Structure formats: structure tokens, C-alpha cells
Amino acid sequence: MNFGPKPSNGGQYCHVVREFKKIRKNNPRSIINIWVDWDRYKRNDARDMDNYQNKPSSIPNFLFSYMNFEDFLSMHLEQDKVNRWWVLCNGRNHFNSPSHSSEYISEFEEFIGEYRKGDMPIDFDCHSLDNLKINQENESIPFKS
Image (cartoon, rainbow, N blue to C red):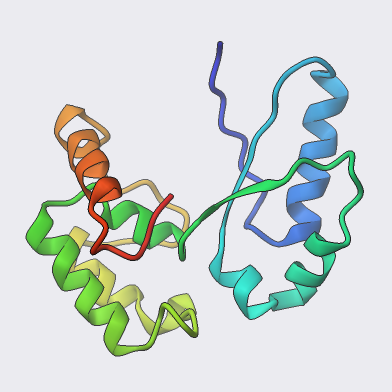
């Protein structure tokens, strides 16, 4: 089995589906999973949730990161940093009303340094992947992938 991520230029439903169809056309027998952030679907940005709920059966169900990519990235950090990130997010009511990146990017940079939306600023090594596994299994952390 091969794993090959293909970006869709953001998680907007129409972009994701367009990329899926392009990949499906060239890989008709492959298993294709679609992984997007939940925040924009919960907010229904650009009617993403409406479109998702009305998707044709030829489009697979999406896999969601709760809430956004930065939450997923934070799960690769040490427990104390994840807890501090959770406190900041909770203070903004992020888990009920997901924040837009403009509301949190400067705070996120305090944990990882300079960051631009969509970047992969964390070195994915055994240590960060161990952190991800531990944090994923920790029921007190509300963001998951």
C-alpha cells in the first residue's frame, strides 16, 4: 500500500471534490481517502457542509481533523504545549465556534515559530509521532484526527 498525499488548495468542498475526481480518473482502482479540517464544515463556510451533506455517492465520506490543521500539528508537540494550546483554544470557544486562522496564527507561532498556513513546520520523526499517538489517545484533549 502506498500513501501519497495530494493537496487540494484548501479544504473547501468544491476544491476537494475537484482534486478527488482528478485523482480518481488516473487511479480508478485505488482506495482514496479524503482528509479535511472540520472547522470550515462546522461553520459551513462557502456552504461546505450543505454541499457535503448533498454529495453524490461516488464521493467517499470525508475523514475529519477536529478542528483544524494547526490542532493536528499541535498534537505532535510535548504534552505541556498541547495543554497550553488547548487552554488558548478553549478561551476562544474554538471547539463550539471554530476560530478562523487570523484569530490564532500569532498564538500558534509561539509554539512552533514562524508559520504560514498550510506549511509543515514540524519534523515528523519518531518522537513527534509518539507525541501524536499519546495525544490522540488522551481523552482530555478535544482535538483529534
